[in-house]
Every structure is written in structure tokens, then in C-alpha cells.
Length: 575
Image (cartoon, rainbow, N blue to C red; front, top):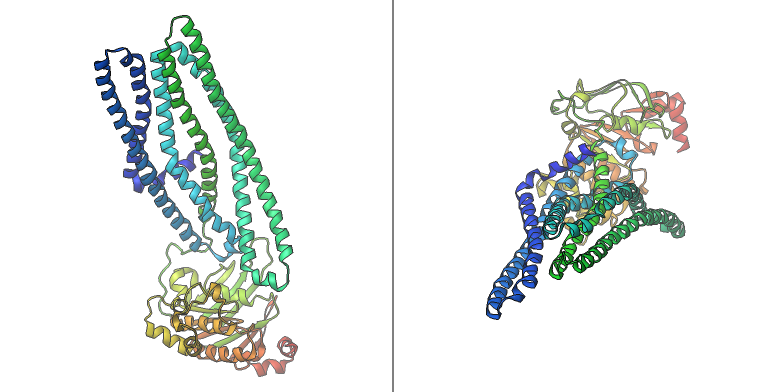
């Protein structure tokens, strides 16, 4: 924990000026709370016994001082509440940017095993709790310590015996808080994990709501959610159980302190060693003393939430991207597009079987190569290795004779265009989605890319043309329209290497014809790899590779492979 807290404190560095000002005003605010009871003591113990005129003058003077202290306290609270919260918001901004940027560096293998809802929880609710801790934590501790220590010193100067009676319960309170605190910490961690799980479940349901409704499975989803919701409620109950024990115990200790002070004070008054004014002052200071106790109660709860959130933050930040630039990586020059696989082997993890085993393959620049085979043969995997979405276990992959592991990821991927079966369009306009292919492109270049992708005509028929909002994931467009926008995006990128991953398999015949025409236009003079589901779409491919679990089983043109009457011929007649 000590090392983690050291790391957490580093986030104050850019805002030290505001932080120390926040601490200064916290100290001032605590000072005003300690001074006011002393002024009241002077009024009740001295001023009321003066001559009338002298008493009125003194009372006016002391009243002005108290008014000034109240105004000072109000300003201190304003600064702490406003500027302190803004500092916390800026720290939250920095941490959110840090974890979001880290998400961008993590590879496909990380996202294969993670749920989007849980990742979102770490970047939203977790960070809010962390920054609330960073803002309120130091000032709450400063205010509480000053009030407790200050009240103890003043009370000891008035009556050491009564001060002893007031603070005799403190060691018991500390032990009680320490014991219960451990259980609160554990329940806070569990609650945070359950919250992430339920967020993931909600995200999964809402993303697939059309599938849910198409199968009329709303009741099933509600039952699944109820189970997760019940577990979340159970963890909340456990947390509130320990919180109730903690708050109840601490409040009882505060009340016991007041009872002890009144009882011992009355005894000392009857013995003539304490006057009523001092007892009244004591009771006022007991209020000053119990306030920081309540503050510390809130702080401990805040610490549980904030620190458990920070632990989850660190878990993500500690994950090193398994695919990153080599220390000596260089920027890739403009590719001609000559791709070579040399005895490449790959498995998705240490426990999974190998998808590719010692695959060797040469693809000359500008060639059009189709990959076919049964599901699970490794077609998509082989293509995913070229832009280094995954790293190979053995062998090497080179482009124009350069090992891709010696090139920077950014310069490598900028020269590879991918059109997938499952098109992902971002919420926004048609124009913004095409521009994503090359953010510095002009509007004329965007329109030219759309024209090349056979998308311009249907885009202009939309209500607002290129500025039409397409909804979440392009839900307002048809499958063929979404595919053509994704192709326009690649046209704008203008890469020398293309990968078509079953880009037309989910389309109707008419849409497939239009999209296929766009793909063929895009593939001209580029190295192109096509993963084919419908073999009729690759009849004109210059080279077809048939993949099996054992590697490349057959190779040739459409006619050559049919004549062999092997795997390809069977696949062709099956489909």
C-alpha cells in the first residue's frame, strides 16, 4: 500500500500551487473553529460581569471579531469547495487520459479476454472516487488533526482533569476503527468488482438489444440481470453492514465523550474546582472535537472507495502491451507490397493449440491472393499477423524484405487497409466516418473516395448528405451502405496493402455486386489478400490458397484447383 500511495501522491505535482493554497485555507478554517469558543468563554465568563458601558463596548468589539471570523471561514470553505474540487476534476482528467491512452496501446489479445463494461467502469466511476479522495483526503486530515490537537491543548489549559475525561475514550475509538476498517476495505473491493460486472452485463445487453428482441428473450435477459443485480445488492449490504457498525460505534463514542464531560464536570463544580463557564466552554469544544471525528468517519469510507478504485486503476496500468515497438524500430518506408511468411507458427495463448504451423508463403507486390478454407483453418489469423495485431511465436514475416517487428507499429499499420465483414462505424456523420481513413484529408478527397467506393450516390440521397448522422454503429444505414462507407474510408487511406476479410459474405446479391465492384476497383495495383466465404467472388483471383489446420494444402487459380478435384473443388460445390 505504501508504494501505491506514493504513486498516487504524484498526481498532485502539476497542481501544487492550488494544493498548498487549499491546505492553507483548511488550516485557517480550523483555526476559526478553535477561536470562536474562546471568545464565547470570555463573554460568558468575563464580559457579563463588567460595568454596562464597558461590557457593551467589549461585546461590540468581540462581536465584530466573531463576524470577521465567520466571513473568513465562509471564504475558506468557498475556496476549498470550488478550487479544491476543480483540482480534483483536473486530476481526474489527467488519470482518465492516462488510462484511455493506455487502452489504445493494448493489443487484441487483451481485449479478447476483457469486457467493455468493466473497462468503462475503471475509466468512469473508479476515477471519480479516486479524485474525490485526492481532493478531500488531505484537507479532511489537516482540518481534523488541527481541531483535535487544538481542542486538546485548550481543554488541558482550562481543566486537565476534565480534558482527561474527554479524551479517555480516544484510544478505544482508534482500536475500534482500525479493526472494523479492515472489513470495510475488503467489502469495498468486492463491491467495486461487482459494480464492474453489472456494468459489463448492461453494456452487453444494450449492444445486443436487437438480437434480444428478435428472439423475444427479454425475460431471459431480465433474469440474467437479476442474478447480477442480486449479487451486487448482496455486496452492497455487506459493505453497509460494516459501515453501519463503524458509524454506529463512532457516533456512540462521541456521545459517551459528552456524557463523561458533563458527569465529571458536574462533579468538579460541586467540589468547587470548576465553574459553570468552563463547563460550557468544554461542551462547545466537545462539538469542535466530535466534528472532525465525523469527518474522519467520512474520510475512511471515502478512502475505501477511492483506494480500491486506485488499485483497479493500477491493475490496468501495470499491464504491459504485449505488442509494441522494438527499441530499435524504424519508420517504414513507402511499401511496394511484397509480403513473405517464413515458417510462421502462431497460437492465441500458451494454453491454446497452434492455429498456424510453420507456414511459408510469398506474395509478390501487386498480386491478388484469395484465402479459402473451413472455419478455424487460420485465414483471419494469418491476415491479422501482417499488421501485427498479434505477434508470431516462430518464424518471420517481412514486407519488402523488412521484418515487420523491426518497424514502428504506426508506420506499418498506416500502409495496410482492412475491410471487414463486421463493419464498425462510429457515432457521427457519414463525412466523419470516411475522414477517419485519413484525418488530414480535404473535403474534395473525401468525396472522391466516396465516388470510388460507389457510395457518393446513396450518400447524397440521405437527408443531409455527407452531414447525415448515422447513429450508433451506423444503425440507420443498410449493410451494403455501411460496407461502402468502410471501403471509402480505405480508399481515402490509400494503402499499398489491402486485406478483405469476408467483406461481402453478409450482404444480399445486389449489395454484394455493388460492393464487389468497389473492392475490385480498390484492389487495383495493390497487394491484396481476400478471405473468401463465397467462392464465386474470387473466381478471377490470380492465386487462391486453400488453408487447413495443417497449413496451405492447395494453391492455384480457380480453374487449376477445380481440375485437381481436391479440397477446393469440394468447397466450391458445397457453396
